Image (cartoon, rainbow, N blue to C red; front, side):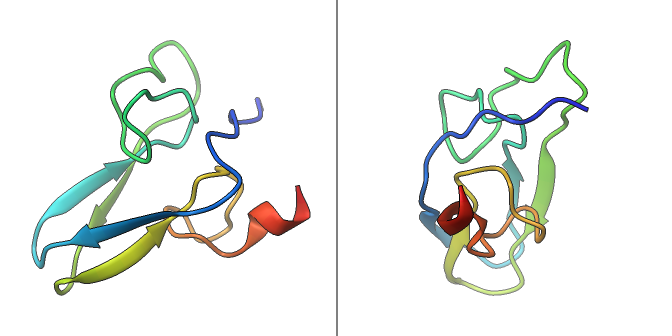
Length: 79
């Protein structure tokens, strides 16, 4: 399996809206981080759907190595 590109070594703080779906970039190649723009085409990566349960701020993983996709778990601290 290929390794994702590290888009950032910190999470992306994002305000989400209840009921809205977001598609997190898992490959790290998107130009619209932390969200997918289709740059994964031709790879084994696929975007990860996240549906907000309530209005709040979440932290989407920027390093693409989280075990809690799509949210940050602190994995960037070990890179």
